[in-house]
Length: 586
Ligand code: ASP
Image (cartoon, rainbow, N blue to C red):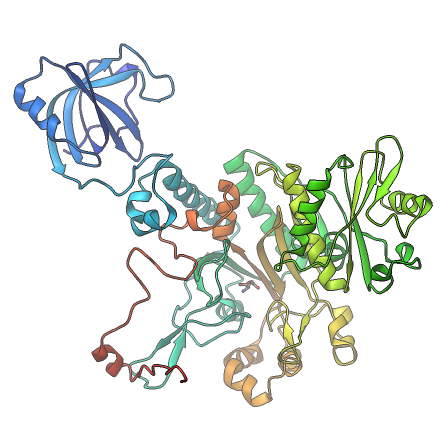
């Protein structure tokens, strides 16, 4: 028997028991004639002690121990002289009589403790060692709990967990596919699913009624903190439902997770139209933990000598409470912030509504006190507040102001990680114009249904058509999204047509779905939550990397197993593949 107890288990009640423990040596301390060893496993740390009077052989064994050795010890539980209230096992220690080294360890490349000395790349290379650290492992324990709670909730609602294939035919979800060459079908490729979208819709045609899957999806995109080439979704689909049924069911899931994991009830999730979100926050994933809502001052700020405003399509102000005392330096820094190439504003205008009631702005040359007062009133500013103003082309300016608003929220400490503000964003546009290809793209995906009341606009004003599509947003993070689907093959054909597919192309890519719809497709709708993002939000992390056991780095590489990697010529031959090295032009 390797152990009678774990390293996190023994308490004062166990005194005088003889126990066997196994685990990793966290550290060895020698104090006078005594040696103390911290033995660690997933459950905790237990202090072992060997005193001067111990047999020589035992003392010699202890002498050999190094960090991260795996050992088994036998000994008696003693009450500690000096207790450690910070450790659950801090009242006891084990007076050991036997120690067996099960597996020695080389000196690890970084210390395995919460405040480790290892840098990011090193910890990624030795991910299995990093995973020994509590802070990292706890994120994965949280992930496991959340997966189980999700399964239990959906199971209790009659959802059937169904696996869908990983080697599929490409389904467009807006990103690039990863592809896998087929050995048996030379020159042909599978794609890895960007999501199981078509399969879950086919399961509805099959009468499954309610489907879910916690499933890996793959998208070949440039990586960011909240993106990995492979990621996990809680993917769902329901039949005979309307949008509201999906929102209620999945709001239920989110609230269940909040209650069970965080012990909180965030209340009913507000619903906001896409148009309102863009107007008020310049974003379809607004962080509603704080206000600083956009005020469109285009009409009241034009008409004076200030050409920049007069030439602008849109002028927007946010009111920052209590910020009238921002210094020159702070304002210069904010100007630099909005001028960063990633944000791209030309400049920033401020209006300080001082505590004494006076008003001071960076555009005093062009606007008098009455003008500025009218802006302040329009924005509901009170003495002590400050307005920050950007102007330009509407969409760009909204995005810039969105970044500035988030930055102000951060500076003022309004983005507390323990404050959760979920909402549904609904009524997304069905289509999105792509300037590069001069074509419409589906904003969600091609299977999303237009709002019935907007179907009439499909031919005349396609850009105005709203979709029955929705996103769950929490604290400015898009946690999930879905839509009511088209279940009529004619409407689906029309949609493919709008998206620029010829009937032949549509048939070649989606023929099987269109065929399926000929055999009795129920009305259906669905959603997918990004599971990694949800877990990282609950864990209070900014990146999804630390809720993934073996993540890739920003270049899409696994630095631990060094993939991607070349394959042998033999393999290439079998797959009928040839690597064409691109010659650099002379
Ligand atoms: N397949 C969609 C996605 O991955 C979600 C859905 O429409 O259900 O975003």
